[in-house]
Amino acid sequence: MKSIRAISHAIVAMFILSQSARCRGQEDFDISPMQKAEKEALYSTIQGFVGDSWNGSDLYPDPCGWTPIQGISCDLFNGFWYVSVLNIGPIHDNSLSCAQDLEFRPQLFELKHLKSLSFFNCFQLQKRFSATIPTEKWENLAGSLESLEFRSNPGLIGNIPSSFGLLKNLQSLVILENGLTGEIPSNIGNLIRLKKLVVAGNYLTGRIPDVFDGLNELLIFDLSRNSLSGSLPSTLGSLTSLLKLDVSHNHLQGDLVNEFAKLKNLTLMDLRNNKFTGGLTLSLEEMCSLAELVLSNNPLGGDIRSLKWEKLKNLAILELSNIGLTGEIPESLSELKSLRFLGLSDNNLTGNLSPKLETLPCLNALYLSGNNLTGEIGFSKEFFGKMGRRFGAWNNPNLCYQDGVISTSHVPYGVKPCQKEVNLLESNSKTELINGPYMNHTFHFIASKGFSSCATNAFSWNCMEQILVMCLLLILI
Ligand SMILES: *[C@@H]1O[C@H](CO)[C@@H](O)[C@H](O)[C@H]1NC(C)=O
Ligand SMILES: *[C@@H]1O[C@H](CO)[C@@H](O)[C@H](O)[C@H]1NC(C)=O
Ligand SMILES: *[C@@H]1O[C@H](CO)[C@@H](O)[C@H](O)[C@H]1NC(C)=O
Ligand SMILES: *[C@@H]1O[C@H](CO)[C@@H](O)[C@H](O)[C@H]1NC(C)=O
Ligand SMILES: *[C@@H]1O[C@H](CO)[C@@H](O)[C@H](O)[C@H]1NC(C)=O
Image 1 (cartoon, helix red, strand yellow):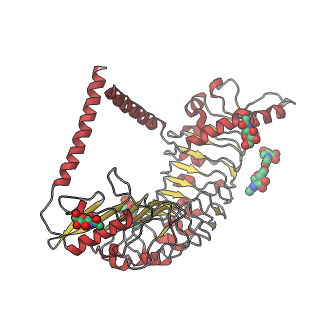
Image 2 (cartoon, protein in one colour):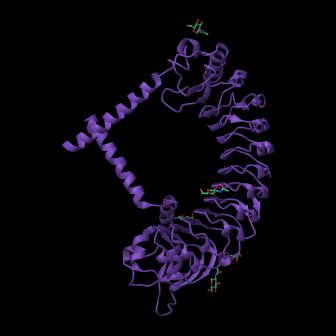
Image 3 (cartoon, helix red, strand yellow):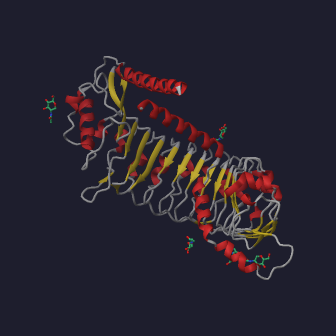
């Protein structure tokens, strides 16, 4: 007990120290002036978002010096302070929070050294009032603005202004989880310094513009969770630095582009929940850095053996559920030594299950349910013990496990034991097993596990959390 108390006190002391260090840091200031126009523009801009009752000149007479405003940073240019960072929204306890009927004031565009502008949780959904992003004047910020973010603003509606295409110094454009509609403006292709392009979680429609041939510094491309349609643009192949490509949860269709082969640095590709067809294109096996490939819930089709899977030797997550795959599960998959998650559920896979899959050293989730796999599952009892409920093979009517080899607690759900003799009642008991009441439960349990990749890590984090909570409780007592 004593030692736990000591630890908890140490934690509290560290916390207090870190807080006071932060406060002291804020007090460090240079006695440099700020031009009146810049100061007025800052006050007015903020007032537009937080409401007229906020009296900036009264509360923060020296906003870049000894009365800093939370969320605002300044830089010196020729001996004067200028606002360089403006974060609106409740990021910290004492941040600026937004008013109900807020507006973008034109003074925003007078902050000519603004490098970073962000809005978080600011524009709330309400019937009476909703805001749109101004369409004009962004060119005033073209020389300085490097980062522009709109996150979690459900009340921000209207289109993405095409004048964003004028912000030629932009390195990060994040438009995440707002209420925006319309198309992605094609002059986004002018933003050749972009490293991060995220327009996920809005209501965008139309095609993805084919304008990416100049964006060869882009690292992150995330257009997921919109209603985009049409096919993938071929200029995606110009994004040769790309690390992450996510267009999941849209209505995209057509074949996977051959240009994927040029994305040699891509580590994550997520195309799930679209309408892609045309099978697995060979370009996939050329993406040699891929660690995570998710294609589930598309009509793709084709034979799973059409790719040389062994070429994707960094793969850790391979999710190919419900994409109309046929053929037998190839042994080449058992050469992917980093594989942790293999999802092949709800396809038309046939043939026997190679016991070699068991030799994958990192594998901790294997889902094969809803196929037409046949024969005996040849995995060892240790393998079933290790996988537990993260092994799913139900709804394979002709698959069975070797009775007696597996201890009863590790029997795979929904799979029947192999029988030496043909049993006339077999088919009845089989459907009972598959449709039995406990199947729903199992499925939800496994689904909720999702991609949980490293059970041991998750466990230790939980432990840490519990220890911290215990410490806090002890202090309170
Ligand atoms: C804001 O504060 C200043 C200084 O205290 C005062 O002169 C001014 O009238 C105030 N403005 C408003 C709109 O309340
Ligand atoms: C790919 O990654 C490597 C290693 O991080 C890097 O040296 C190389 O420049 C990258 N390629 C491109 C086209 O960005
Ligand atoms: C997959 O199997 C289902 C049911 O047996 C069948 O209706 C469907 O046509 C098959 N699809 C392919 C691509 O073979
Ligand atoms: C499953 O495969 C068996 C042969 O292995 C075949 O007889 C049966 O029709 C297939 N079932 C479906 C639903 O495709
Ligand atoms: C299992 O799910 C099926 C279909 O979703 C449903 O009809 C059935 O009632 C469920 N059974 C139980 C026991 O929840």
